Length: 136
Image (cartoon, rainbow, N blue to C red):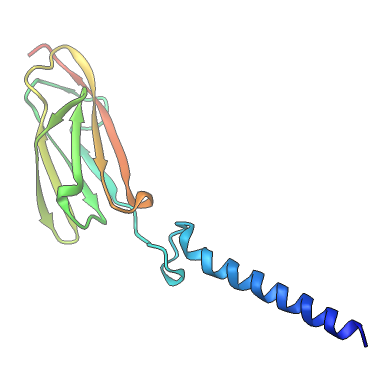
């Protein structure tokens, strides 16, 4: 007869532990929207022009395509740690982003460094490609 109260006490404790585990599962940032976390599809860069390792003149235009992008204002571009102004054009279902190599860069190699920000850390993206910049 003394086994029954002990069994009830153990069962009650295990139920409280299971309930506590379920309460915290949505706060781990695991990306599961059904559990209360946020989910996203990470933006993807493609069709970078000029191509990786191409030689370009200072002031040359560049472009790339971003898929799975909610807001073009989230896109920022730097070349040799210099912010570059870009223009985004929506071409359903993606954005074409265009900019220019800074005129101040000569006879060097530089990465077109693209960052896409988001309020959700797991939805942020970064990518880029390397270009050789000629003397003129």
